[in-house]
Image 1 (cartoon, rainbow, N blue to C red):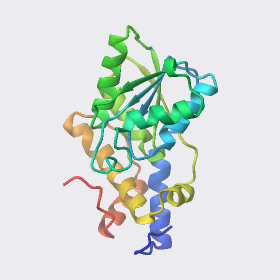
Image 2: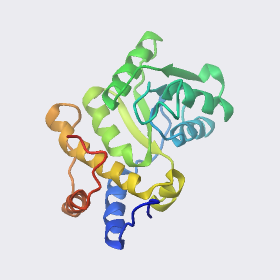
Image 3: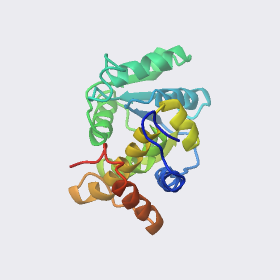
Length: 221
């Protein structure tokens, strides 16, 4: 696991795997009223949402997300729009997809998707929350804060960390993203953005070690 310019040590790989595993909640998938795919750089979110539809776990997909500096070049028409197009290319019918094109953060993903469903007269009791593999925990903590009435189950593409690094093509960037998401899991409850999540000591120690080693490009300042 390495980028083209930096080597990641064995100890850092172990620390990254601890954080990767922590981010994934491991919910048992079950049928839900709607699946909400949270926009990002990762088209695997749309692939996973389409798979859930084809498995019969939901009859409706919502893709949410506008653009951010990290996705504008990859998805110039907006994250949700590109996700929709990808899902349609995988055989999901147009009538089964709603698009929320304005959200710029996870809280907005959830709140704006809820508002879109309300406008369509849809009031789900259960939601499949589809995310990048390392974003499950933060997304879950967010939906429990922003939309506590709904029962949320997290889903993501089933990949080992090494396979995800290969897909992204930059090990340093992936570790930076793992570290940045964990910082948000830790700090967002204090800002009122999410519910608190217990962080095991070994995971927190891995986080501190990777921050000290310079895996900081996705940290909030």
